[in-house]
Amino acid sequence: MHGLRTLATGLPAEAGATIQKAITYLENPRPWIGSYEHWRQLGYPVGSGMIERAVALVINRRMKKRGMRWCRHNATAVVALRTDLLNDDWITPQRLRAFP
Image (cartoon, rainbow, N blue to C red; front, side, top):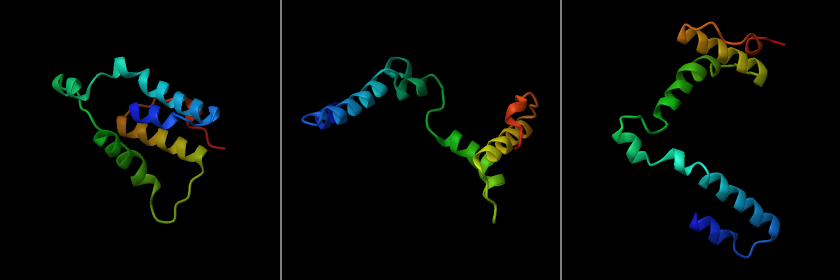
């Protein structure tokens, strides 16, 4: 935070306000985020590896094949269906499955 505060020194009001919003955004969740070391000691996974693997499994294998192009709405629906398939969970709201 010290670096951001230093950066904001001497800037015009609008730029300073933007940096202050960033500082507030970063400071507010601090109490409930805790420290990574604490979460590791409790046995929780810390890091992005699980999320990156989920993206590779759910999205990339289906949507990044040769010649494929997707609009956002259809891609969202396909990802919802693929997630349901992989989780064997068919309770996803119907609105996520609708195609235009």
